[in-house]
Amino acid sequence: MLLPALLASLTTPLEAAHADGGDAARMDSYVLPLYAKAPDLTELRQPNGFSKLQRLAGTEASQPFLPRETVGPAKSYAPLSAEDSSTPAVPTEDTLAAAAGPVVSLPEPSHSMTPAECVLGLGTSKFYVKSRFAVCSGTQMNQVWLVNGEPVGTSSFDVLAIGTIPKNSRTVTVTYYFTDFTAAGTNDAPDMGITTNGKIAQSWPASVKYTQGGVAMPATRTWAQLLESGSFKHMVSAAAGQGSAGARTDSEFAAYQPSVEIKAPPGWVVTQCHVA
Image 1 (cartoon, rainbow, N blue to C red):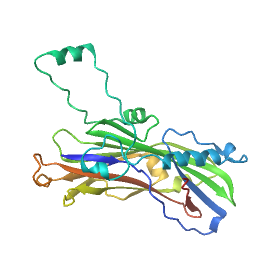
Image 2 (cartoon, one colour):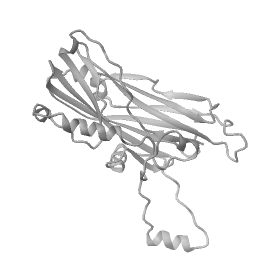
Image 3 (cartoon, rainbow, N blue to C red):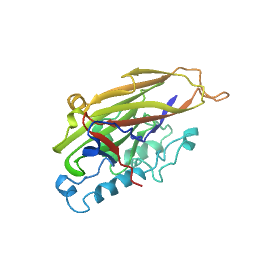
Image 4 (tube, helix red, strand yellow):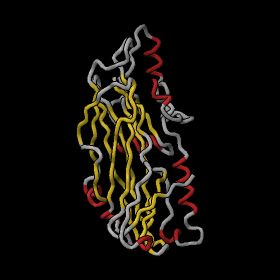
């Protein structure tokens, strides 16, 4: 069984996009928690107007890399969250009565998740684990547009990555959703490039071979294109017979890592703002 041990780190360091005009026209890119309420253009123009934005970016940067529920050898891949990413269901009288009987039938874990379920489940967390077959993560990409160092516009969008595995399947489907597009003031957000990349960062055992389907990665779309059609799927499959030697079951564990890269429109320079 292939498990999505990781749907995390929706951002990676961005490459600087060089454009004519130097720093005269610059776009600062911030990665914020999905639930963040970023300061608007009026607030950014006030003294210390960027302080809140920097604090929010720092909050996102300090979040753990993996859900606490991560199992198997993938647990050693990166730091785990200190708290569970989901809340166990409270047993009802009916389920308790059923458990007291001679035969206990456990419900089938969920194999699906909607964007609404993902957002609700995430709350103020980076991960939501609905079941071992349905997990998600999300983040907010925020941009500030500056001319000669002064903020003239803002834009932002949210990204969700929902990973699911059908019953009795060896294929992970990661559906990317781009939502909640906003723009204000002077900006070239519609022409901004957004490159999504999803890959198996590490496997256990390392010899596992994967096949891919859906949208070829990396996938580049403009803001305008994603605003019109803001979702696509990426599939990763592992054939049977590649599990750990000597294991009772033919199991593989994998860390799937999605990332999003912002590229500036012509005439602008993009700066990735990392705040510790």
